[in-house]
Image 1 (tube, rainbow, N blue to C red):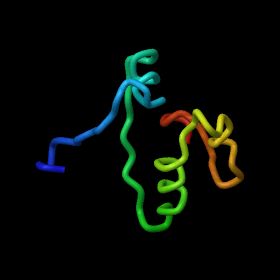
Image 2 (spheres, helix red, strand yellow; image 1 turned 135 degrees about the vertical axis):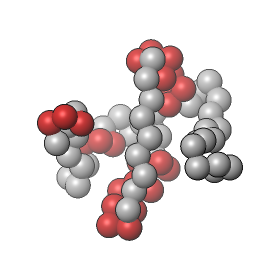
Image 3 (cartoon, rainbow, N blue to C red; image 1 turned 30 degrees about the horizontal axis):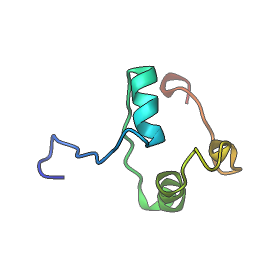
Image 4 (cartoon, one colour; image 1 turned 180 degrees about the vertical axis):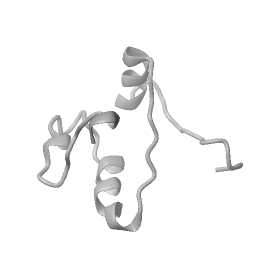
Length: 68
C-alpha cells in the first residue's frame, strides 16, 4: 500500500478474482486480524479454480454483511 486510502491489486485476466469482478461488478476487501490469519492466508493462497469448495471448510461461516 502506498497511501492510506489506496489498495493496490495485482491481477491478470486469468485470475478467478478478475473473472468474479467482471461478472459481479463488485469487489470487497477484508483485512484479517491475528486471530484469523490462518484462514485469511488460506483464502489468499488457494485458488477457487483448483478447490471449488474452499469456502465450505469447517472454519468458515459465509453470510451477508447485514446478517452476520
